[in-house]
Image (cartoon, rainbow, N blue to C red; front, side):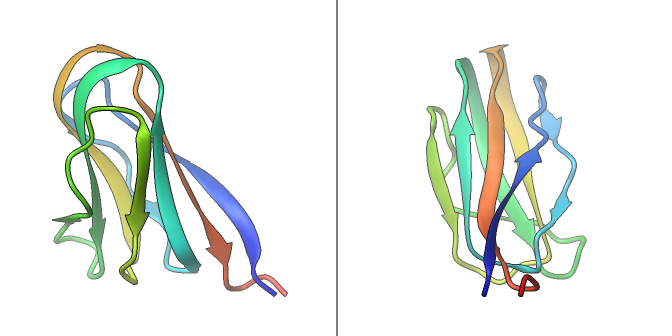
Length: 98
């Protein structure tokens, strides 16, 4: 039986991409963006480990972004930053759990 798990994602307080986290083992993945901030964030993912693509629309307010694709890595890119402390966490079900 799959076990729920979550991973904190790095969100930069400047323009740039946070550290990519390996999420291949998860199914039914979602990224929750939270905190008080004025910024534009983009959840990005990759299958090959180098070519990232956007997942869902850009985020400017707290909310949840589903990650329906099977991907190897997920990260959050800050494309504009003014103030605050944006945060993100990925949740999913670990397929390796028994």
